[in-house]
Length: 524
Image 1 (cartoon, one colour):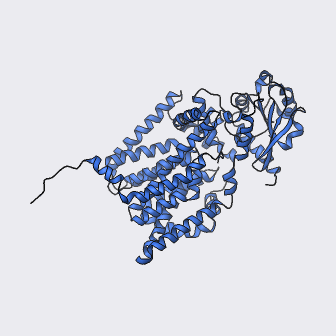
Image 2: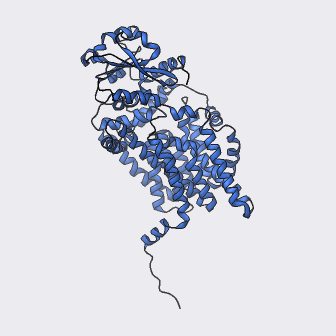
Image 3: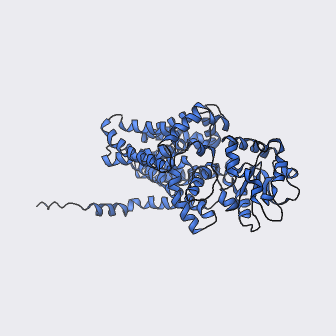
């Protein structure tokens, strides 16, 4: 006797999927990943000034506050999308914990949570092969030190990667539905808006997904076009030409070689950096990548394309190829799962534990050696100086004396509503008379931040209070008693100084100050 056909309720299926015991390991791994990432959101370090001054500062400015305006924003080289998305977390964070620290922490919590998409994507890539692959790939993505380190940083590279990985997952399904293609296209476009330089890698992903079936392209383009339209509308809402930032980027970086001002490196640099970062671990990683390639070939070529493209750009930083590193580690994790299944059935559990332990040991060892101890602590000295200044009830104005201010926390965390002034030798109004100009304007401020080595150049009535190490050199708070008359330094407010120094000077100041910092090293 045949049973009557009863249509299944999709919501019932979804509930069964979400509560399936097969997903319990994923839930546990996601909780582990969150436990490693979220505490770092409260750790007041930063990897690069961009995470504050390119994204959080513009969001703070959109809420009606004063903020530092970088030369990139003056030239219109940044999309308004990411700062606009940061406005909500910045505003809520400041409401929860006023004074700048909440506006710094909550966005970091949000992006750390968003980074869990990488862990979930690694699980899904592995699930296409076996349960062992899904568990090991997700576990590696949860504990790998680079993923953990970058998770709370409000930088375009890890945020864009958190969109590209699920996009790759959707677009590389054997038979993606129209919904999969629309969603994948939307995520790919979102990643493009976050990180323009990932466009070649995104193009390879799209072409690879459609190469054998061009009928997939229309829904994919539809999803991408919708997100791009939203991005363009946000530009318009801020009074900018839609996607004018793309043109400005090409003009400044490719036609005017602005990136060269930040330093140059040969085309082989990223390969050398991989050896520096992964050390001897690169040997088993290479074998694992070779083994795992067959499980995610398109993801491998996305990684290669990203690294090749950035190798052609003269200015290089390891964070630029975060997408490549992420994809390669996930592929290596898939390859290492193959080794587990190659062992005898009775030994597979122990083999899996041994390989997982090897990943943990490698991650911990690399995170504690080389440049990483300094990276974990980067910005801590500056944050402590800022906290001391912000808590100082007597401060009525702060001057930065030939000090690279992008090494410091955001304007609000540094001075709040108090005036912030900048005195730099490259400023046409100061030049060779920097110390005299600072002395003449010193009634406008009663606190100065400067290198300890510059103490003799400061006004005599400013005395050293506290010093902290920034990039290995002592930077100190110098203080005087008395009130402030801000009009005495009206021409030296920070944004006026930056604008006067032909817009690019913040970076040039950075190079000059970094040289001075290197020359005045202190012992730990």
